Image (tube, rainbow, N blue to C red; front, side, top):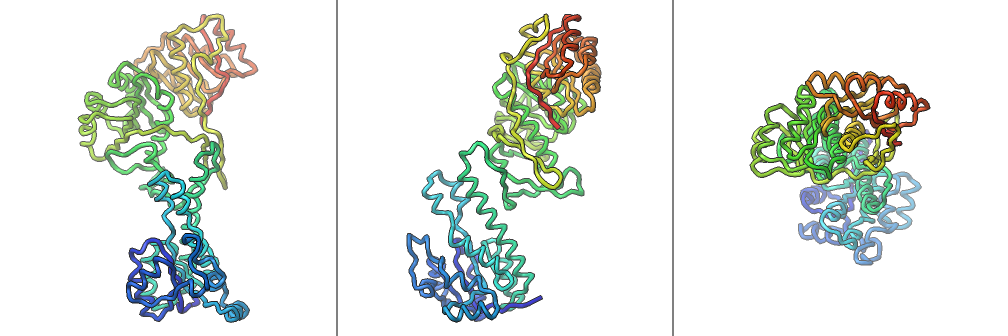
Length: 508
């Protein structure tokens, strides 16, 4: 591993904490130091000699500090390869070679979080610093870059162990960190400028990841990229796992359909709703949702669209669950639920507003518009002789909201604003329906007068026939099959009503 002796270093940082030990070690090693502005004054305050960059360049810091290091006498010393041709040019133009560059960027991300003043934010876009980082990292074969306060420690360790020399592997490691820093910095600048664009391209910073305990299974490592605090705050419980986050995402997106409805509760397992109900009180909604499938509710994700009170908290705490989510909790309910230290308690601040969704696949990522469409009663087109009653329409709209969030092929059976049976993730729609009917009968939930929702059209009349025999009286589906009329004819012959939405809600 080729060693390079450190003879000179350029230091220009925003955060000074942790810098003193580095400066003193470099001085002890006989390294010539170059610096600018506040960093130069800081080094001088340590009684350590330092060369002013403005003496090197012949120019003072100008434009309110916007231009200090942007000069060939600085960048030449960083970018020059330690080869005869480049070294001869450095000598010709009296440019000192720079072996180490230590930079800590202006706190752009922190400034955005602290103020809406655009002029303050713009001034925290570092130009010279990011240029120094990229230049030194590019020339890592000869130069070592220390690109952030987080790398002060590793660099000091290297100085102590290497006694002023660096190896190629060392320089490459720091260069890798440098491009992590620069990509993270650019990500947040782009995020700020693109904040008003409806269709932002997918970008994420590898610095923004939160390590998770493991992935879907214990042998898989996992991390989350993003800002959970925008959507909810964690009031108590263990750290959210990969599977928890996937389920929480499904729960919040489902409940977004009911955000403006009366008290509604949902229970989800493996991203699918096994219980959903709307009632006059949140306790009644919980009881009805749980009744939809009390077995699957074990270890599930619970979500409400209204404040959870103590009575409801005591009721839900009778079962084992992983996470409970609500827009708020009464003080006594929150205290009660937090007694079990491992159960995760989330306060929902907002529903997701992203208009794009992404999924890793093969060797890349696929993108699509988020399915933000949800049909209302006014959007329904009656295609049978018998029209649905007002009560049936309410249940049909409810069922359509539920089935939209079930894995395809999906069927939702609803009666009195309660999910009484569901089938999901089946390879045929008939199987999904049979699963939904079995669920309802297993838990003694009535199907007489229930309605059925399908996430996609019926290619044959078999599903409406099976549903009719189970007691279903009204059906909601997208329509669009070349054999739609067969299902319509069956409904007409058996006094069932059917409405089309015109929109499919596949969920793979």
